[in-house]
Length: 293
Image (cartoon, rainbow, N blue to C red; front, side):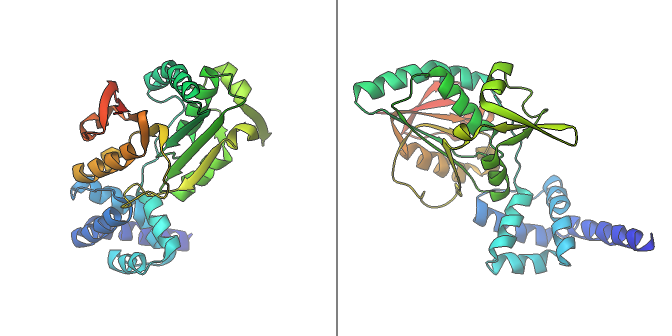
């Protein structure tokens, strides 16, 4: 009992120390900006947020303060860097989030497919740039397959990326709780998921033939260039630009837009429309943009 109390006391003391370490916060915030492009404004809320998320990481590693942790991150330790980024990224997501986007997607897909047929290009390329735990890319896939049921002779190239490899692994596994799939219409749950029960808890698993249609890969949107040459017909980059400063967000949008086919579509979060200024795009619908010809 005494050892548990001592453990809790030491953990609380470390948390309090980190909360009041302004210089350490600034160093870690700069590292986060350089490594992930995420901008943390130096204020009390963010100092407490960073301390709360990193104190357990430091404590379990036996690290005493931000300075020691900063040296570890700057040493290039890949595992430490990934854990650092994972701890400080926000992965709020759900199936059919911002549902109007998927209604619009369902409406525009037949037009897109007709244009592709006319060009004799039976291929659709999709990119979900912030896949998180997978709810968004699987929602896009279900919408695609329900909107265009006659795709037997088509190539579907679907890339889903995220900087956080921990959530990306979960996305690739495609396993969700009953609460997480509650927003999926029952007919789609039955069609695209199997169920499994362990210790009286039921999980929903995306069927392999649908999981295998998506390639999940780690990627940092703040990189100077992206590791592919091809262009996409549809790109989703929702609710991630808000974590960049305006200049960085603008660069991300410019790079994503440059990887859209002429006439391709970009979906962003509803709170991010002020960050999408580029001559490559024109507004199409609320928080949806189209690549200029």
